[in-house]
Image 1 (cartoon, rainbow, N blue to C red):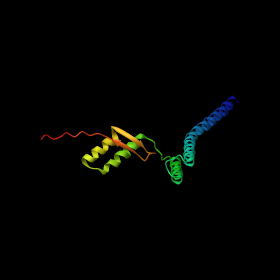
Image 2 (cartoon, helix red, strand yellow):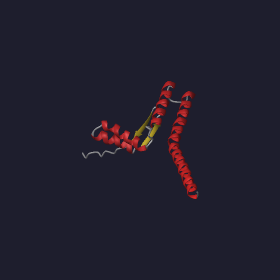
Image 3 (tube, rainbow, N blue to C red):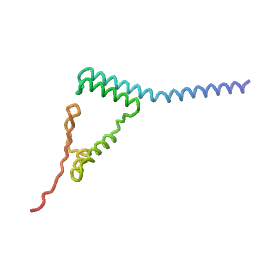
Image 4 (cartoon, helix red, strand yellow):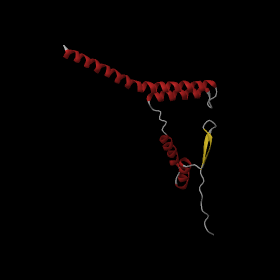
Length: 133
């Protein structure tokens, strides 16, 4: 009788442990889904308020697309990705122009503007020695 009591107790503990582990596994994705949905609602509120720098239709489309991508797990805010994208845009240039582009992207001496204002201007100063005469 005591042996069967321990067996039942062990089964109950195993079952409860399994439920807790399953709940923890499910909590991760649902919290990120909840975060994505909350961000979508914030973006839509910004669109509807008229304070976005985009047209209403463009703003709503971008918010919907970002939400769909976030639900698929495709949004990545890693700074490394931004740097890789910026350096990849410099690949269009050759020689000194490529070096100058890389310098502007990777270590600008001055940055001004904003995306909302229409663009970010990155400036870097390159000193070129004057050849002797």
